[in-house]
Length: 265
Length: 320
Ligand SMILES: Cc1cc2nc3c(=O)[nH]c(=O)nc-3n(C[C@H](O)[C@H](O)[C@H](O)COP(=O)(O)OP(=O)(O)OC[C@H]3O[C@@H](n4cnc5c(N)ncnc54)[C@H](O)[C@@H]3O)c2cc1C
Ligand SMILES: Nc1ncnc2c1ncn2[C@@H]1O[C@H](COP(=O)(O)O)[C@@H](O)[C@H]1O
Image (cartoon, rainbow over the protein chains, first blue to last red):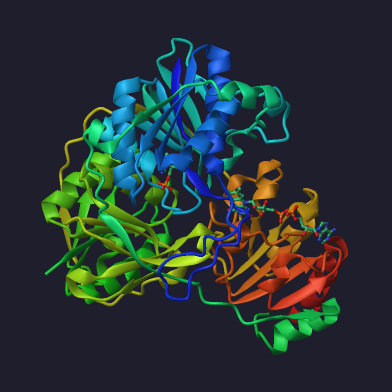
């Protein structure tokens, strides 16, 4: 089976993001960049499915030449080949989905696995847009019943269950109030939640091997997609700060404060 | 004049999901800012009772689409997209719940519309209205402009109070959608049954983190004493100690109760993103340098296994 996964380049989720005082953007100095954590989970899931069912994992990323770093990271984890859509300017979710739809038409994967959200934009949209543009079924927020400390996880079993005839995938989803289960015909779009798996580390031999794996370069013009953003950011601001609190020495003081100061109990 | 269409969400039981009322407020505000009118949509197996329940909320019309079963994205996308076109909506929005997050971008895709997720407020007015939304786990509030004719919005419930009825009686109109066969089949829903109030609606939330080592007894006991909900950090959900439905944060639920108690939670920005709008925050952590203390109104450096029972007993005495 062929699986397409995505690897967006984002600020390390542990970086401290600070807005410039003029609201034009964030300070870039000292920021580290990584593969979006949800996309790393997508890559891992693709690799587990390919290990179980045979096949290959193609990783795609849209961005300037620096996104090749994230593609190499996915290749080092074990992805077989990479597709880089070279576009340096701003992009919105509809634009990215339009490009990924064209990549899917070329690559014809059985499944496209994306992260549920990119931790920079926090939009949670591209997978759903992509499924719609392709006319495919979808299952967002894929999870699994077993914990990340379970034996199934230690055995690197995939959380997505492909049916015996290879025509559908069963997906457990994290939704409000519990877990939802869907059967989706293939080809399908799946987006990952954090509980789907614990991604592997790239091994040293993996990193060496990744250097010789192919990265195909495409462009929006070549794919025939107009990526002029329909969503533009006009301003950025810091969120309102909370006023500084205090440390209380003991439970009795805490209760007293909650009662007479905060008046919440 | 613009048309703002707000979509009501039904729970699997068929009842109205309360977050809808926060979205109704967001819709009312948007209708005011754009000089437009508010419409509501109710989609489901049996939309009539919920449409009736919403008649007093001041909408120009309530559009019902029946004959749908349990929520699955494809049929609901078909139905809602046809409705949006039929009422010529300029804005379509709903609460940023799991359903809202799943459905709206797909509808936006069908209608080639731009979408802003987790909208917190507005800037400007008329056709130039822009939307405030969080980025980087809420470290930044961005103002965004959407340039497609139809604009799709999901709303962050904590930023808009629940709508109260305004009187009057909206006209209820049944809409018939044509629903093609779906490529997705619903299999089942494993509900987390709980007698406690809903996490996003509770006045008090008591959350536990990895510091509980999976022992939530004291967290639950305090929540129950205060008639509150139980929340958790992601670490606890990943470990399989509590259901995913308890997760508070950037990628879980956003809550803003009157009182939020965080026990054994370090305070990663991804967790803070989901609770820093709470009115009063109490943190109990044995590490005095834990980042949670930076947002806590009252911080107690202590072992939660000692502090939580003590806190519960004192509060119980106070209640008499
Ligand atoms: C993409 C992404 C998205 C994420 N989204 C979320 C999200 O939505 N919500 C979320 O919560 N996290 C999220 N996380 C995870 C987040 O980064 C943190 O890892 C997580 O919040 C840590 O959980 P914790 O505070 O329970 O655990 P830890 O960071 O391990 O902290 C445990 C704390 O308990 C204290 N402690 C230990 N024993 C005791 C005791 N006996 N008494 C008192 N205190 C004690 C320790 O001092 C420590 O501060 C996300 C991460 C990523 C990468
Ligand atoms: N520039 C990009 N390149 C590759 N994948 C992307 C890009 N932008 C978004 N995605 C994918 O879409 C998912 C959801 O992103 P978003 O809708 O922006 O939150 C991410 O987790 C990625 O898998």
